[in-house]
Length: 286
Image (cartoon, rainbow, N blue to C red):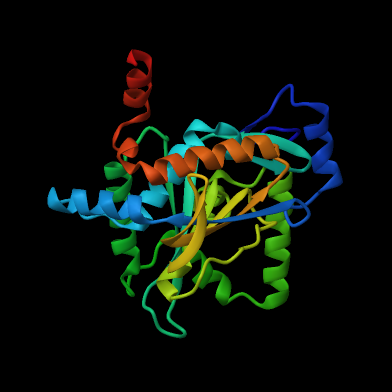
């Protein structure tokens, strides 16, 4: 309460503009900004092939997921959230991912939320992500979030409405129990969805007003498209990435430089093999 939360620390000395914005745009749906780009996959393909020769199996998902984690680590304002007119720095990096247990109509979905320090390399992130996906794709497996959903499914609608409203009030004043925040996939740095696996192009997914998610990424299917690269318009195989963000956490300049960094990792995935400390040491010796 009064700016104290278990999942973040209040931003101090924020500019007047960023102090006012949360009171003008009170919800995330008020403050959503949209961005999309077609990412050429030739760089990722070359890297994936190279690693395959070394006996390491990687996918676009691994590279993009790792690039998001590393970008948030190096651009910490991306890891902010707004609650009750106040802006907070999140205590850790969390990425939520929706998983369809089987590709069938009516098949159950679940959501996993993984925690990172931002210092992990791509192989550590891949291992952690794969273990969680394999475990949670098991139809019989029920994670903590699934168990909570099952319990709430049996709750009458009017009680469910009261419970969710009560949770929102507790969250607003920073007194939502830490255990619920840990279980909630909506209290996360970013959401990532791979709709390309469903055979469709990237979508703009809204931000949730419940929880603290400030960033949402969606990966689309592979396609051919014309993109602007090296001052030329060329046709490339690519995937589209659609992004929705909360403009109250940082300005357009910060977002733009963050996307440039993200693109750098997509074009040079080998940079993700180094930990943050190793990369910093390399830069210092150059």
